[in-house]
Length: 373
Length: 103
Image 1 (cartoon, one colour):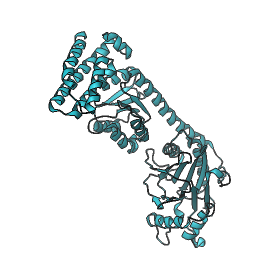
Image 2 (tube, rainbow over the protein chains, first blue to last red):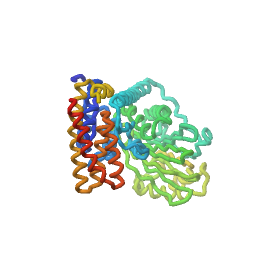
Image 3 (spheres, rainbow over the protein chains, first blue to last red):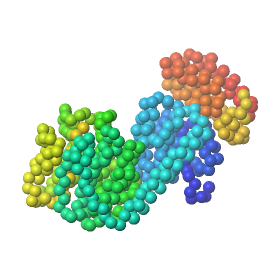
Image 4 (tube, chains in turn brown, green):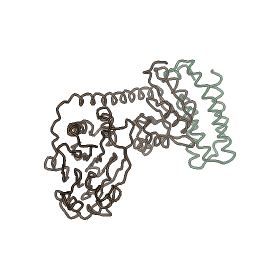
């Protein structure tokens, strides 16, 4: 050891034999190894040493591997470390739960040490490739000198995406923007965002973000991963103090699944065809400031006719009337509920008029997007 | 039983494998003791956990006789049956003794 670029792996198993077996194999491959025999030690070592990969046993007395990964994924410093689960449990449910919690792979015991080593190598490579992809995307975007005109996607471009939008920009270089992305057959991504500040660099940044969305919102990445990758690039290229709040929704009309990511943005309103409308309240960091971020995430099973409204804070905040998010979201929900019978095309404008009857006195840009399942 | 071949199968040198087998014997004897205690105290949960641990360690190193017997006990313990433990204990001790003699 002593080389800065030695890759390190944290091995976590309550059975000392498994730890020794993995250690012996992986040390021979040139990795440096940290060992933990229980959950609390694993969490401590992961936070202190930030290993490049974690091999984590699921069934451990006390804190299980599932408990450990939940904590790791909720702490910025450890959230991006790839975790491979190691377990005797071969049931499909446990596997799915592991993946859902953020594991990159699964190895069923009894394992062959050489298989573990091959998979560790694969996931280290993937992790390194992802990091270098982020760096090269940042470089490419920095090379774009001219601000491309930020063309707004209109509903007639993607009729299958089934959305309506009302966009009002007060400034030449508006801070608000939106994008709709065809991801795959029956799967669309919807993005509504607000840049801090309204200076001229904003329009250049808007086109950068649109480029990043195109590159990173693909079927192979979960929505949370897409937004994290975009965050990592923006951290590199945004001027100090500049940041972005956003809601990103990915709707799969085939599986009837809606995944929503919140990045410091006003909460999405959900108006189901049947049932109570509600605000999807979530905490989440803003995009472009921190390398280690935590975004809010919710997954909903949806039905045809259900509507989602994504919007920017100009619609519900008012410095004049001293209205802030918390009350504003309640007003928004009432307005979205009131728009239930209105067509998808007209609903956004209808809601805007309900909330901002006096368009003369607008204080900020406005974007409101309605999505129907 | 050929320790060298079992080690090679795992990609390990003989001396590395022997070091690992020594750790295995420690944990295995401790699992057998736990099984014995669980049988006495009729603790099916503890019996299942000890059998699970033994099954995993033995299976990983290729000691399949031990792994299979432990798997049988684990399955039974999950169904709240622990009567077979009594006759399994001396079998485990014999098999572990044979491994011990080889190193």
